[in-house]
Image 1 (cartoon, rainbow, N blue to C red):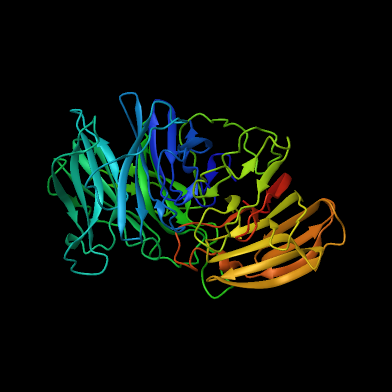
Image 2: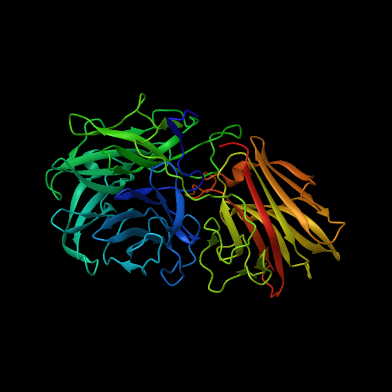
Amino acid sequence: MNQKTFQNPLKSGFYPDPSICRVGEDYYMVTSSFVYFPGLPIFHSKDLVHWEQIGHGIHSPEQLDYKNCETSLGLWAPSIRYHNGLFYIINTFVSEGREARRDNYIITAKNPAGPWSKACFVEGADGIDSSLFFDDDGKMYYAGNYIVSDPVYEGHHGIYLCELDPETFQFKGERTVIWNGLKTRSKWIEAPHIYKHDGWYYLIVAEGGTFTNHSVMMARCRTIDGDYEICPRNPIVSHRHMSLMSEISVVGHADIVETQNGEWWMVLLGVRPYDGFGGPHFNLGRETFMVPVVWESDGWLRVDNENGIVNREERLPDLPVYLASPSFCSDNFESDTLNFCWNSIHPAAEPFWSLTDRPGCLRLFLREEVMHEICTPAFLGRRQQHKNFRMQFAMDFRPEAEYEEAGAALVQDDRYHYTYTVRRKDGARVLTLTKVKNHVRTVLAETPLEQDGRVYLTVTATPEGYHFYYGFCDQEFRLLCKNVDPTLLSSLVNEGFTGAYLGMYATSNHKASGNYADFDWILYEAAES
């Protein structure tokens, strides 16, 4: 990579729907997290390229009820803003179906690292992907999307605006429709962000859905609630005219920021697909990318590079290089708190892990819940961030009954995942690789473990698929199963919004158990960027 360029994505793996703001020389970014907890990861940078996670917007079960939602519901696209010493995140919590219940709430913090407040719901705020705008006169506005009650075509959505009371975060006055999709016959308009520049109010939206036709559109008006003029060269960013097997595909859902040096940059989502299994697939989910943008003489934004698209390599911002805190992909569990990378599926009412019962290890207690149901299983996972990787688990586990099992899980959701676990069968320990496809469970491979004590479980990924190994020391790799279908964890298998998660799993399969598994360390290393 050229020393004067950076490489996309900014955040690899499942970090979709980025939103960004600047406070002085500091930049803050937040992304979606759906049902994973803690939720809404928050990052900090000073050069827009090197980011470190500093916290989560939803870090406590008391802040928000996750309602045991299925994987692609929950915390959708957030927006982060700063005004008069306070940080704001507005977010949509989706439940009861993707176009069913949509509750919009606001959380605040003086420090973006947290703690953040409990969720304050905006009564009557329907739709998704809401955002906030603070005008020069101090007024606070809510912008969100809505589903047209009498649609003219599939995906007929629009954008509305309403003033908010800055103390109660409730609507003041009537809402105003500022972009009805009919005007441009746009499908699934969402993710509105309002900016004020050179005397104009600019509105940037996502359009076309989250896959093939995803794009970034914009409009402008001299008044915030007036008749917005549509940009004549929309979409201003899209790869819809390119092959779905392009290096970067499905770009959209953007937010922009101006640096202290007057440059403008856009963060947006995209995917990096792979082929060879009947079409483009992506297991990493939707990732965060960045491109330079510039205001043209006609007052509209355009991508400021040679080809006008999102590239793997882009020029560096004109900012001093920022050395973020070191970030490691592996974990020795020597801290008394979990690394930011680890998430559970929904918040747990009671912790199912301990970092203190056996210092230097993460103890995972067996729960009755199972991965193939919508629930909160004993699972702690991290995002798959690379197409090719190796992940190794050092686990001590002695199953006492045949219904007890513990090991690793590779997860798209409750319907599509792999479990790679140690259990007891006919009085002896066995290692079992199981596939769950649309809730149907199939054992792919199984082997007896002739030694007691610690077992090392290794999962690798190459263009041919996932490969599963085991051993009784960290340098032993006995092959159990190779070329396991990677498309099971593709976001497309369930038209899902999340990426693949890799992690530790323990269950007693609907029976009570006091048993546990200890994980001494976990190694995750990439074979490519």
